[in-house]
Each structure stands twice: as structure tokens, then as C-alpha cells.
Image (tube, rainbow, N blue to C red; front, side, top):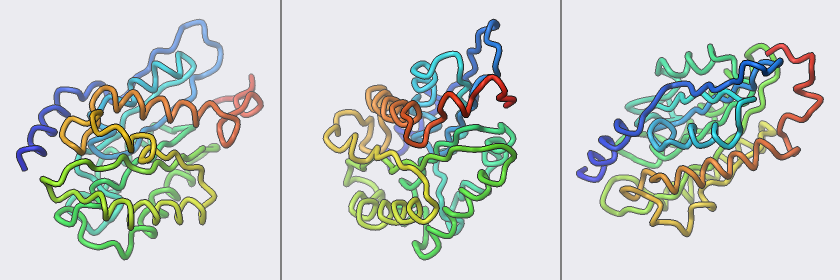
Length: 229
């Protein structure tokens, strides 16, 4: 619990503005809106801000992370029950990045795995039903490098991540494997659960590569001169 308390303090210190918008005044088209949906790793690690710096002024990045939240609706803090969920939808994102699952691997927070895929599908569908054409990326959560808490990397790797893969395949969603990207970087974590600045930079870099690749990412024709936001 001491580790989690330390992590919570750092998260509060690192949390910044909900939306990072640095759009140049001479940009004719509206910026592409990117909604970062997740738990404390999204809320406090700083990766959304680092992602914005990589993407540049043609993008607006919104941080809609909620510390302690889960995909599962049968938990102490379901993401879909939090105000940030509605705020993320009201943001009218063009790209949605969902990185949830770490807290679903904590039996003290999430009580059942039975409805995980169904709940995740409900979360994705809520964004798919927004006006416009949303590109939704599903992120496989970072590894857990601690044995001193109720967070369980074995459960994350053997149960949560395979269900994320299954859900992504069923819904034809592209994925970003942050779990593998950070697999050899236990030194990039503050407490074994929350990535530090280096970890956040690596997450942002992997997401940047995904968003700016033609495989599932917005191409020139998608955001043409006729794009209205």
C-alpha cells in the first residue's frame, strides 16, 4: 500500500491540464482531436503531453484518464461511470486511445473477469456512435513490476491482455502493444506500476508511431481541406 500511496502522490504532482491544445493561429483546418482514455497511467504519467509534443500543432490532445478506473463495470471505479467518460465523448475526438486494464488485474479493485470483453465492447461502441469517423486504438497495458501490492502481472498477461486481443480482433480495432514495449524496462517505473518520465516518453513514442502510420491512421484524404472537425 505504501507504494501505491507514493504513486498517487506523484500522479497528483504530474497531473496537468486536462486538454493540451497548442494550435497555431495560421492553421486553416481544425486540429485533429486525440482523446487519451485510461487510468492513472494516462492521468498522471505525462504521456498525453509528450504525445502532443510529438504530434505537433495540427493536433489537440485531451487527457481523460481516471486514477484507479477499470474497464469492468463490476469494480470499485468503473471508467464508464466517471465524469471523464462523458467529457471524452463531449471532446468529439477524431482519434481515441484506450489504455485500460491495469486495475482490472487487481482483485481488490475489479471483482470479476466474466464481463470484461462485454464491458470493453460497450466502452468502444460509445465512441463509435459519436458523430464523425473516430479511429479507435486499443492499447495493451504496461507490465507490472512489483510483487508488493495486489497488482498481478501474471493475471494481466494471462487473462486481461488476451481478452483485449480478442476484443480488438472481434471489433476490427488496431492495437498498440505497450506491454511488450516496456517489457525490458522495469527501470522506467516509479513504483512497479506507474511509468516514470522515461516510461511515459516510450508510451508516447509508440502511440505516435501508430497514429502516424498509414495502417489505420488518418491519411491525407481523411483530413483533407474539406475536413470540418
